[in-house]
Image 1 (tube, one colour):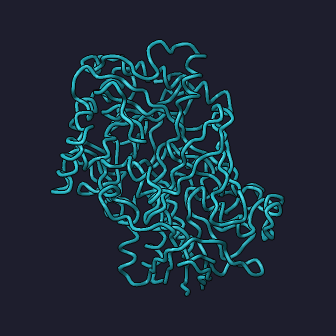
Image 2 (cartoon, one colour):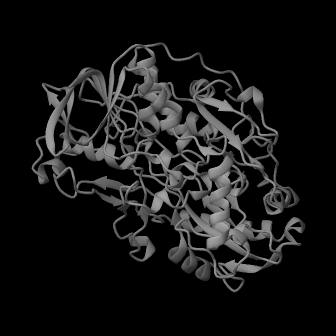
Image 3 (cartoon, rainbow, N blue to C red):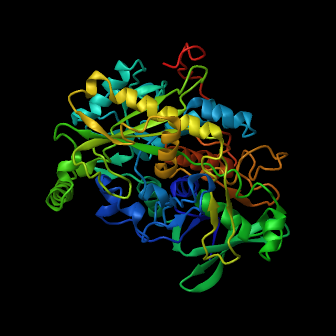
Length: 552
């Protein structure tokens, strides 16, 4: 079995690359361990909490006991299904801030500045405002990926934006346009009331060309001879076999599985590989290092009116939501319900937003556990640029065994300061006049949790991952000893092999990572094909004019 290109992983970046490489006339084999993405639990946006908690669709990874969180182990869901994590995520679409990508370039990812990546965002998007404003000159119109907004008809959703403005913050019509900073509508990857995953956007059209073949199997190692990758050894239907790549092998298996596969293939820290009896092909100490994530807290409020989605939180209500969606893709099930958002700066002297808010008109956890208070609402809030770094390492040389994942969350004092500030700023927003008709009392943390020590205790016990792991195969200058891939996504020290997914991020971007992961797949495709990059944009992003002296 062979093709011009063999891609490991049918996730966000992998699907995009399969599409673009086949579009250019090449044969492509995509290896994916997970199964079908069919069925309402994936396709109904409102059912998002189900697939990310199902081993049928999720690898079921957990962190090691986190030393700064009292030994808690945090879930690390990764998509084990066609579409990867784009089939089990919350469907929130955020490009990242312009300065994120300028920082990438400064860190050695030359050619990945905001001016360089913006054309690829425009290429991937098919955007509509759904009647809720926006910044059309900054948005793509004809791309494979549908991006839109929910109905925003719940009064709590608009109250959140009004409260932010009342607290003195900016409003923004489009955080993915010129101006990220401020309060405004949140965007989602849905279309006609259904999840619009990378599988729908890219893989299915690619499969229809006849030039792309999807193979179900577990990638065990990259076959490398005399420093060149020439295929992927995979377990398919219980038998190990090599799928040959005539041109290149591309790994797009996630920030967890991409470094794992590199290490299993002899690419990584030599001492670590030798400890597991793996022959060293390339000593790259950065493989599996630089692991980053976003943490968040749920600041929950009990509602004084029955206006939240809690009215559907019973068997009859869920049946009604499901029926509406099955019949005509309408009702609450047609939205992920993340319909308002905010990006703000934590203090004066911070150039661009370093705090993100998701607002949800119900008090509920990602695992589907609703607050006992009944009607309520919550803000998911967390810092964007934690200095903490973790690692992904091998547990053994067995490809079927999960790796060790240690995020090292909250290992810097700045993390604790940032989260305390997040809580206090959120309380200030919920105290604004716009929420006065709706607030009964604070559920979580609780009004009595005020001191730094009390807040720290709450943070330690309740902080959760936003499920945005990245950075474990860092992109950088070929002379950087911790870089794993160069700015064209080529693995340093091995020819014919690239990595292109969220693992190559030098630094985590603002917001959710599905959009940037797809962008990586789009841009990497041009590098793989040897094409000149798309012409750089001359658009200038908005930066608060008084950022040096004002927090808002």
